[in-house]
Each structure stands twice: as structure tokens, then as C-alpha cells.
Length: 304
Image (tube, rainbow, N blue to C red):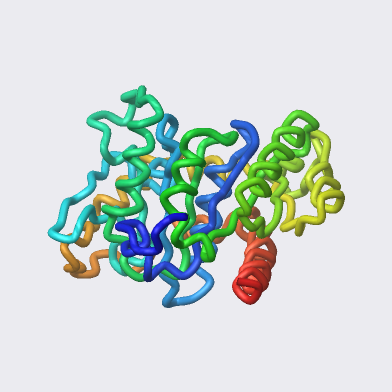
């Protein structure tokens, strides 16, 4: 039985909710869903404090999506200081192996033990502070990273929950079923399922067309007794925004990252990425998904 007093449990003692985002296969937009979930949780309250941890060690994409490519991690007397996407307020903290690479194009070729060690460091050595939510973006499938994550977080298991992301296609749904089987095997609560890439948003008129199949995720959720959190179509506005790392970086570089608890002078009054995201079709749709997540979190907390 895992000890309840570990470096990880001590570091995460002030984190209220930990949400692990899972997908059965790659290419279903899991990282974009993780990013949107973090942004919506951040926006849910003027005081909400959110962390996003990228444990997709061989394919870290969260720094790019938040416009933080090229940023570095600072070491303080109390551990690593995460990179803040909203530098002025320091309410959206991010950590990724992408911040530790000399060049963003460098590959990460690590065996299981080194991956395990890095995940342990992310959980025990990062100065997360008080968080309302910690969103964890994981690699596709169920691999070493997932097992390491759950092993290290065993002492805080009562605060863990997950969201499964799939696309409507049959192959993705089969892999999502394997993902669901994993959550049941390790007793990880599932807040619900999101069907991503369900149709296509016309950039001209905003009409949603079902280019591919749709509804498979909702049917799987109904069949398996899961909450269906909602569908997200392919949104070119969102794709352009999350891929525009150079533009986001230019804005980001106008501000300075807080180090050692010192928040610098406010050099930008607004969180530019959030403002631009709020105008996309995806942001409007994700509000309903967030409502479902919040209700499920409340149910999970009560049952815990």
C-alpha cells in the first residue's frame, strides 16, 4: 500500500482537482482538448488557478498551443517554477518537457525508467502552489507514462478523475474502449467522453457539416454508462490559433515570467490567447462541455 506522505503528495496537497485527459489513439486532438479545458477552467472564475502538465514526453505540444515555445523553466529554492501563460496574473501554470529541450525540434528518445523519473520530477519538484485544477495531457494509448503517473499519484487518488477523447470513426472508438477498460482496471473515475472532430465548421458562415461520421462517441457513452460531455467539430479558427506559436510568442515575450514568488509589473492587461480563443466557435461549444465536467467533478467529490 502506498504511503500517504510522499514528495508528490506533499507537493500536490494544495491541488483540489486533478483531471487526466486520455485518448486511445493519436491524432484525435487530445492536446487541443486539454488546452481548451485548461482555458475554460481558468475563465470559469476570476480567481481560478489552473495548472496544465504535459506528460506526452516524446511529443510535447502544449507549449506551442499556449504560445510558450522557446520559454525556459526557472529553478527556485522551492523547486522548478512553471511557465505562466498569463504572466501578469500567474493563474495558468504550465510544465512540459518541451521547456527543457535545447531546441524545440529536438527528439526525446528515452526508455521507460527515464520517462518515469521525469514524470516523478514534474509531480514532486514543480512549485505548483495552490491550484483549483491540474489538467494532465497524456500520450495516446495506455503506456509507461500512464502507469508511472498513477503510481506516483496513488496517495492523492481520491482527487483524480479523467476525461476520454475520441473521434467518431470506428477505429478511434475501438481504441477509446481500451482506454475505458484501463480506467476501470486502475479504478480511475471518468468524468465523461468528448467526441472531437465531429463535423467541420465552415470558416465563412459558421455552419457545421458532417464531413465524416458523427455520433459514435455519444453512442459509446450511452452503451457504457458514461456521461457524454459533447461534440467538437474541426474548427479552422482554433487550429490557426493553437498553431500560431510565433505570433503568440511575440505577445508572450512582451511580459516577464514570475520567478521565486515575485510577480512582475503588469505589462499586458489582457490574456491575449484567451481573448482570441473566446471568439472561436469551439469556445462557445466548450462551455457546455465545461458545465458537464463541473457537474461530474461535484458528483465525484461527493462520492469520494
